[in-house]
Image (tube, rainbow, N blue to C red; front, side, top):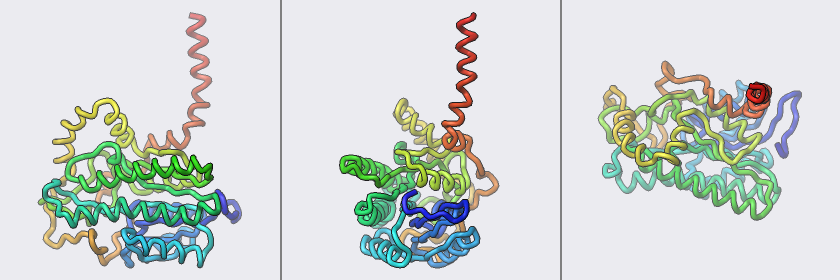
Length: 337
């Protein structure tokens, strides 16, 4: 990693993580901290940021708390300026902040649609531009965009979020082409995720009568965080995390019409739990919740701590090399036969 500094056997650098107060952003901050990185924590909720700071420091990293609304371009720019003035050049910028509305599209107000789009899509745009303004003159650095399988295969009841994630993919593809044209050494990578156990499903705005829940197989945030860290260290065009994410991508290529009809029902019911929405339900669309919600959501009992697909993806070269003798032996037996 450019600008990295060695501390014993650990590599260190400066990373910015947006949406760092909870969920995947918080787990990602800790994943970097375990390797001795200095982590700038960007989010709106001060309680969550302070909790993330304590976890980063316990993991062996340094933390800088930067309260910011990523939908505010000037605030994001000021945050980047503060980080570099106090710590030095940013090595990695992770765009992770998001907001969503669980509702049929006709029940989403124009203001809610705009807000979810500004946080999820424009927040990534402003973060990317702030990073590029600093990385391009140095000709080094990595931008990690935390994406979703929903950037390729939309589902009902999350039109605002799916639209924003699809827009991010289009934006990042365009930026990547421009960097290649300029022969820049700044790298951009997207990490496309399946469903994860985060507080998103506890504080997302909803018009439904029952509490939202992830669709399909659920993974713990640490699974995504490890893949995000590795993508920052060894950037590839895209990284997929979880078989369901990869299956959604392949299904959209080969049988999109079938998925339209299947998800019209399975994803509608599949995103609603049996628990009625509590009367005191508070969402974080316009303002952060007051308390620290931590990294995990309420699905610890069923969330998976490992992903075979993510493991195979990380070790794909070693697996391929290990399979070569078997393939060679099979070809030899076939020839003799």
